[in-house]
Length: 131
Image (cartoon, rainbow, N blue to C red; front, side):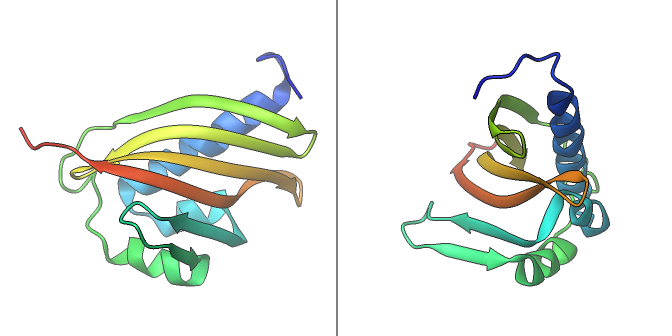
């Protein structure tokens, strides 16, 4: 299903993605809890083995991580695409960096409880050479 960028769903999803980027940059799970559905899945197989976490296991990792903001890292974020599969289902492809890792995230979103929420984050990362 295609939608025009004038569709109000785009603005709503972009708002969620900006919160997502902000929450990651600050390592702030109070922000990320506004983005992720409580039953969301976090998954990658970048290193050749599947890592899958639920939010109860993912958020403590974020809480323990020094934030990119506290390390003086600039914002490195980009919305590559947003597609709608129906009126309450979307897929966003975004890119961001934390430390030496450059991430490509595929974020599946659903519109439930009156708002867009990430229900699955599947991602890949590459190690960036340090300058």
